[in-house]
Length: 91
Image 1 (cartoon, rainbow, N blue to C red):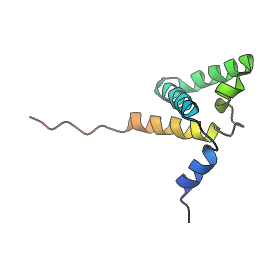
Image 2 (cartoon, one colour; image 1 turned 135 degrees about the vertical axis):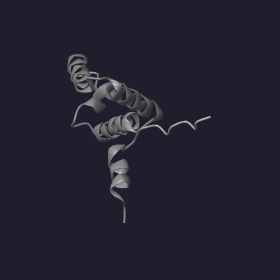
Image 3 (cartoon, rainbow, N blue to C red; image 1 turned 180 degrees about the vertical axis):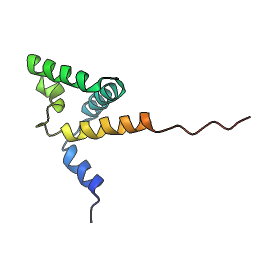
């Protein structure tokens, strides 16, 4: 039986090239680290609609097949940022 995370991985990245993966991860990291990431994401979606460069940035659109992978990366980055780092050993 497949776990939910494994199922998400298969569904999220149908045929993800290394370049697409890097691009999606960079954008997800940028949006996750921005204090107003939702606004940044809205601006990026607006730029996508203006430029119509769906091949390169289409993953930002909710109906794109790679959008679940983008969301997964964005949430993962936000969790990494919020996760407290282990305290350095006192010396």
